[in-house]
Image (cartoon, rainbow, N blue to C red; front, top):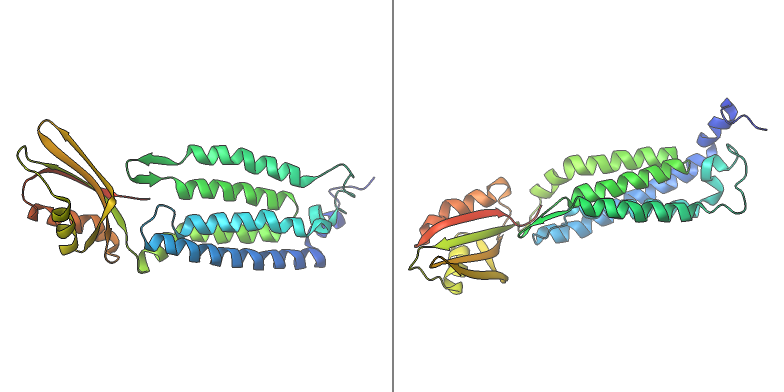
Length: 253
């Protein structure tokens, strides 16, 4: 019986064939990250909930669990570290179970409050963590380390990159009028346009209570104001007559 902790057994995880497989996997992961960032930027540009980091993390993780299937002879250090795989063993069934189970956990961290969605990137990062564990468990140490560094970099600096690129951030606006004040949709659209925002009519909801109108809608900035998106709108809302109360929040997170 082979000694599983023998030095020559452990070094097989870093053999020439393992290096080649890991490097090819890293190239696939880099390509998936770039494609995910490109797709996510299109969503972020239009102020949608899932942005560059979420798309890149999901695309990278999906690539990771797919590409390891292409190198079955390199699983677990080329099978030599722990002997040949039994004929009845199918690691892909284990992978399927892990990803299905982690999906329920990811769904639990996504929260929605009005038009604001939070937790998408956290959910994607949890899914990535499970995929890193799968890649590492299959014996692809270099690919797992590279994927960890790649995804950690996206989570740390992806938001900074996204904020510097041209985009149209979205905000959620709640306006409560004075008792005798009656707003018009075109009036609000013209006001938003005048201060640099686009009114989204499909997001409009109107309620009436205590003799006051309450208007809820989403506006997208005509350009990326970065950290001033909310402040810019809130500082100008006093130019709209008859506003008793207002609330301005991000429409996505």
